[in-house]
Length: 346
Image (cartoon, rainbow, N blue to C red):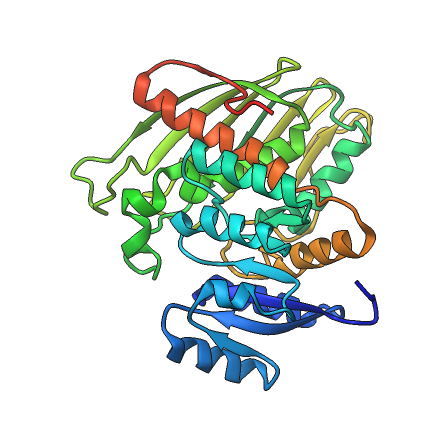
């Protein structure tokens, strides 16, 4: 593509998160949102009108894919629609931003992965917390080996997705949410993988629902997952979407030379003689607000990967590994047995 020409972006699914994708693409100097697609044409027209005269509304996804002005597709629809829409976009030669979870079962996950590999298009999966400022701080500390050799890490997702949230009505249903980890806690699984930088080899999990199931979830909304990594490190993820309290995303990482607890650091390498945790002033991932979930960083990363022919560090192939852990945890919770990884073979 001529770099003087802007990438044309088409967005499918016009709920809340699509607004953040649209905003991020419009802020990128290399992009222009040229198409939007919704089931109801009236909604597509209203969104397109708000974007500008160059944006075309569609109510048919395949027609939007056929629009030769569209170079990038942003998939912001309900979870079960992601696999088919990703496969169609890949076959059409479009680069793709995919909201999480990308798939709810192993068959769809493999089909998506294989289609993207065959098409050789660039992808980014919306594990947007990889661009949260605290994540940057932690990655910088780990890069200095300030904790020494890691042996334990935990990242939790504690967010009561109840009736006050618009997505509650569909998210609580098994056909849409599928499990606590897939619908939400996958952010924590991905964060754990991002910090540990090792391959998971075994998963064990337990799940439950509080007495009376007050939120009427069709699947257990609470899950604790233990992950064994190839190098011997043990990881833990608690995913609680029935949680009562302010949204939290607590992070703990332990090594033989120090510990990180959110934005608090204790390191015998960085601070010899240290007696108390040092606090790093930064933005924590403890809110659903956009300032804590930086979509702009995600979208800029995708565009940069297209411009320079590089893969995103959270492309579909990488995200498959996060989803495998989630699917293995679901299987473990159902069977009461540990599950070996990987689930997919190349």
